[in-house]
Image (cartoon, rainbow, N blue to C red):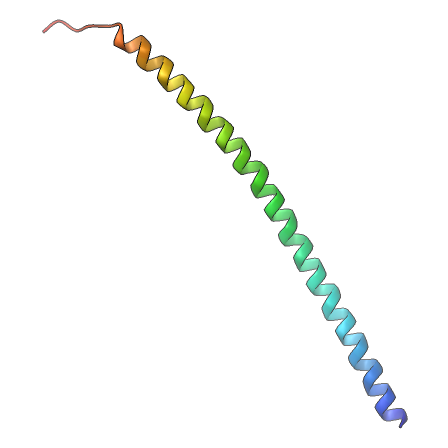
Length: 68
């Protein structure tokens, strides 16, 4: 009977260790996802700024005429 209880205790400890490892993995994934969200937001803001600057440049360039 003690062998069975020891086996169950060992299995429970192993499950606990596995669960802790999975939790660490999920936390790491969460950190990466949060970093990606921040990076995507920064990229979107930069893209909007570049589009605005491109539109202004187009307006400036449109004022120039080349002789043919």
